[in-house]
Image (cartoon, rainbow, N blue to C red; front, side):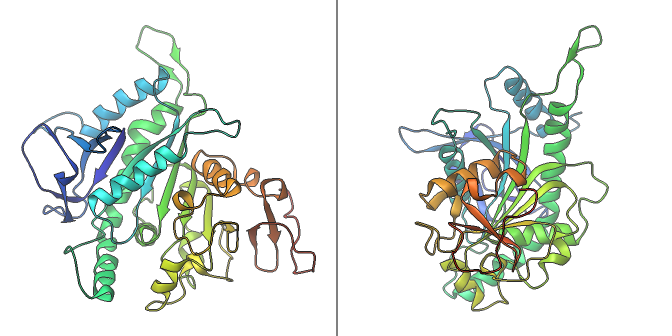
Amino acid sequence: MIIVFTNRALIRTSGGAGDEQLFGEIQNGKGSNELRLAIAEKNKDTNRWTLNLQEEKSRQKELPSQILFRAVLAQVRDGSLSPKWVVSVHGYGQSFLDSLEEAHGLEQSYQWSRTGKTSQPINVILFSWPSKPGGVVLDPVNAYRRAQAAAVPSAAALAIVLERVWAYFAAPALLCKPATSTTRLVPPVRDFSLCLHVHSQGNLVLEMMTRTKALDGVPLKLDTLILHQADVDADDHTEWVNRIQFAVDVVITLNAWDGILRLSDAINPVRLGIARSGFGSRATYFDFTGGSKVAAEHNLFLQVENKLVRLFCQRALTGFPVHTIGGEANGFWFDDSVGTWRLGLRPSAPLGGSQKPGA
């Protein structure tokens, strides 16, 4: 099961279940912050998708997200759903189907624990934004610029998603309160975590949300925010990343050989995900460049079959404190010449690297 928030245009407005063609490639006609909510499930035998659009009634007292998350929280409390949750934001050029498949890939890829047993698998809440507006565009630069333009108005929609997930789901899960006025206290959900995974150009949505102060004054605290291979300008990222107060830990991934970002770099300033210096924000940087089987991969979470990389991803997605993710015991050494954790063995020749204090 994947919970889908989207500001894409609703193609079919009749009731009942639909498929991956339920939403299109342009923004909702009522505005970029007009959200619809659906439950998506993939049949493992047929590989077909079923989407159930959550009903919106006029004059209803509760939003569809309130109703849905109350039911989901009950399943988390009774153990039928894991307490590990990830809000996922995809990148450039993704159709609605592409975004579903990527979210499904995250769920399926992280169903394991270090002992090899299934242990608290992640559940995904997908924010699907129109990153492929206008369909197929023959000029790739023009297509990319259109997606950049679409990311800006989607920032407000992402803020609404995070606010609702927190208010109607995470906060009640973490709060100790009476089940009813006459019954005993319901304890907080044990091991509950809420992380935000933002991939590639999705980080432009995140950047604009932060720069426009869309979450200022909103009570929200994520465990971990992951800026995964960010397709945003590197030179001024410190300016807006340091403003992020809604996450306990902020993680930025790096791969200087990332093939997709090197193409983006040709028409943009240096991209954050392939930067080699300037790492001065409040975030913790993890550099995977040159790691085994990393090569030029753009999606470290789904495309790299490396046990150390997978362990990092699993921990980042499930709210491990960032100081427990780095360290030589976990396959990283700290290069204090630039301020980043690097995957692999510490070089024998001195490069300015050392064990990061307190790690």
